Length: 537
Image (cartoon, rainbow, N blue to C red; front, side, top):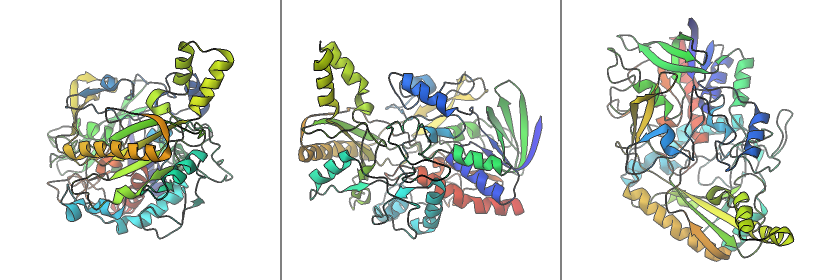
């Protein structure tokens, strides 16, 4: 079966969904292809409530057709070949990983775009912060970001936030008061969740289950734009996995082969093809599309495809406060410490972002369920159990430091042809290690956590010994001006193929220490113009 369209977009996460809307609004015919299924929100919430332990993936069914990695089993999906374990996960379903993201919507800071020029590290982006800034504003409008106009967090703004900031929690204010004057400034975090209700979406009700699912869609997820795209005439092909990109001798992409869950196959013939998968699935598809025309894979003449894999390795720490701070309420995080993303010492010390959690010890220990279990196992019952549980859980605090990871060529995604999934795609093989720059950042973060705990006042504290995954998979198809050192140009057009564009975090040359979703959205919106121009050629 052949399907013809002007534009094919592969992947229905935030980048693909936004782009589908932008192209359709301009009158283009668009097919949006998604490997995974549609998700029923009510069913996902029920699965989450019943699950133990509760992980970022526990609300969602594991599809045999298009499986996804899980936090509990990093070796089950990835073939791990490096010195360190890569444990960031993602979802393959309509709406992508925005189903279980936290909702943090912050910008990179200007220095993040000029690491090479300013600090002699890695590479510069082929665009400046100032070039991307108007698109950040548009992304904030599309995602309906709530933020504090009085505080730009080091990223200069040309427009106000669409919505006022989500109220800081009691726990945030406890941290803020304790750290005042210490050099750790607790700021409200901009978030893609509504602080005020609209006719189409409610305001946040504080269910504290942002990861893995917002039960009322107060938190943004990409199904919002998928639905808008469908109303604009975009054709969504769910449970339809792209398996091979066909290229002509002149370098143009001719078609994309697909396989559906029912076993049927076909092709989509499009004038423009956009790969909007994540930084794991994008190189997997393109590397698997080897042919006489593209012997090293599509868009890989540079040999950079799959390389420079990055995350934001996390130092996770938690403590028991002296006073009750009443966690387990509100969004997962509503405040953080942001000024260390702009350090003048980045030549030797990674940028850091500190995220204050509202969800107590859920992340490090599985609390409150694990706390109740441990207390019951100690022999407590009835009122004594209740009193001990209230005492402990009301004092649970945690903090996470997101570190900047530099791009290394040896940190890469390759193919594992010894393992294929039902789609026919090969498995994912990862070579990954944390270099000294990141390792020093993790040690530094642990020291800073202890300093903050001392000021907050805790009776005991703990650290995770291993770096935790952020779920921020970046860098495997980076953008740049030099075709020999990058995969796409600043307009996200593949250097090797004039009608192929790549959008998503795969194109990030570097990652800073900011959660990447808002930057993904801004880049996708910016790419709409050159894509529409290419359609007009």
